[in-house]
Image (cartoon, rainbow, N blue to C red; front, side):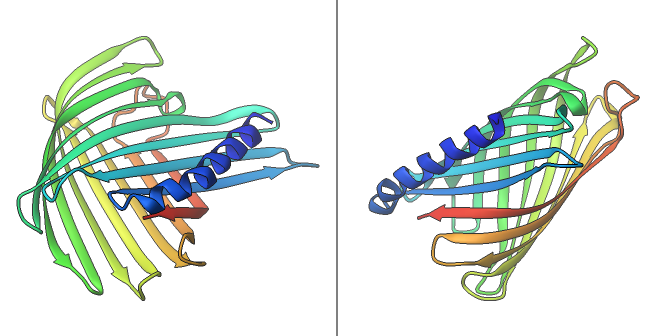
Length: 242
């Protein structure tokens, strides 16, 4: 019931906000909704909500706010729950070269993380800009503080390398592949690898379907009894306002 209420509230907010985003071209909003609720012999509820708001302050400066929520339970036992929020400010030196300041917070107890705080600069370059092929890469330096579910904590300086490739089949249909690697400079064995493969198919100007497969690998999870690899296979409704 709680998951249904979250879904209903988000849908109402997105619908009510559509006119405002359409009138102000400096703003854009992209929401993702995935919801599964089964009954009978198997009672499974899964809710995934993502939202990305962008604002262009000037020709050189833009900002964004990302929210990511995942909630799941099976036979009334919670088996997944994570929350992420991230703020980002970008400065565009050229159409291809840019720098950013990124800060965020993550909570995922099923992955051993009671809280993760991170902040740091990033620099990126767009190698390909279409019309069919798009490729960009970023390198980031982050100060990270983590609190784990076993009541331990850690602070470290980390580096992240991220790459995103997109291929547009048409104006509204595309394939994307992203890969990221995060490494703790004080402990070479403490690293994370992430990958997202997706195909997006447009339904109309504002709605699309996204099929995706996400892999998250943590080489040194805390506590060490946790699995190192998490995967998510999803079919998601995308709602875009530009």
